[in-house]
Length: 524
Image 1: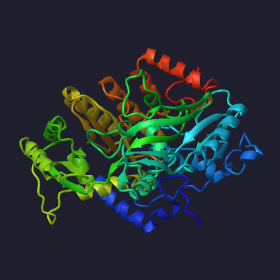
Image 2: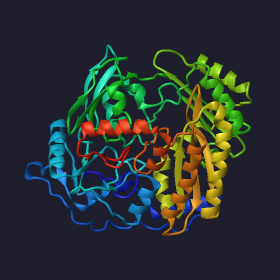
Image 3: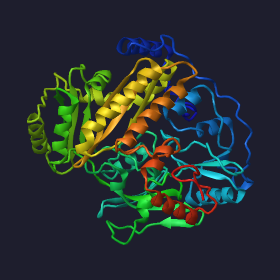
Image 4: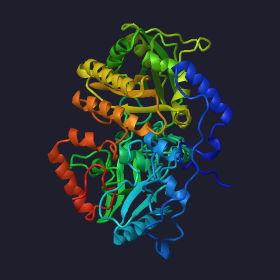
């Protein structure tokens, strides 16, 4: 029998930790955090959902589903508030029909039927959105909601070894596309934390951040051309290494979050698989000293593949440190040359700013502990919810000269909100990506919650944090997209004239406003 994804949480049903393992984690959490339940709560069983308002035509019945499991699975992404609601069995707005097309022509057939039926249409990749990007929480005069799951379109269609490019279908998730590319000795090297389940189309639609902490930080940097289906016809850009011919059609689809079209495939830039690697954990007395070293590295032209600075508290929480120092996870990789000279120069720059390290494997440097915790985090959050612990993040970007005051104010306001709302808790930080002109800070909130009030508690903390980010000059999202959850702050961040232009573009390709309404802009 095929493995099934959890309808309520992260990963597969057979990956749910045992009750004994959850109790052991509860004991560990209470010793480290000072809060959390000792006895985990089980998730609610899948409830009977409301009756679908739509029925797919017979010609599409083979690829369209309206059973409770499929509709529940496609009701939410995987943010904290999504998982809490699903954990409690709350499915107020399930899609009416879930389509799983296997070809682009089937995508087109489902889209045509949904538009004709007056339905809203939500493109769905891996379902890992943490900002309400795939939730059928929709206002407007729609006859229902059709979610189109693209994971059936999962093949590498063509490889151009001369230009180091590949044409890949949008539904291919990280492991699937990497497995197909590896047969040719190639890789995309785009590894977001959601890599296991998220898809190429989702990465493009949300401008996802990936493996590289410098230089090639977003999927934007790896896209050569994109093809999408819209209610007004197909949208496909010319495949080019670069162009100055007006606004880029690719750039309009990058970050469009399913509002301008359903991405079906893309040409992307690939590379030979790296064979030379080096990584070191560099310790700093505090986060501020580490930030100065990271700024120097980001402006050095060395472009490390990994340059992630973790504050002392987060390093201790993840087992990457003992809480006495900030940790810089520094890495280089190449398919063509030894990277030790680059690492040596980077370590010299770190040492000039107080960095210390130990490269003997038996001593350990925190890198492996951080990497393991990074990959395990989405799975642990399910158990945190069962144990009454709020675990959520927010991220942003800011220029270097404003970072010190920005960081201080965002931390202070968010920590105050956590204390006032939850009575206790912590806010830790790290850099996920860095640029010559500024870092991308990423903040993690851990706090005790009151059963039944989790959503309200997080909403208040999120509001304070997001207000602080916008008021202090940052972006509401560096790589997590806008969705429905970030709309209030996105509306404040963008120029109103740009919003009007975006509404005009949407009206041109989506006259009925059917595609993911409520995300980015409201339909005209």
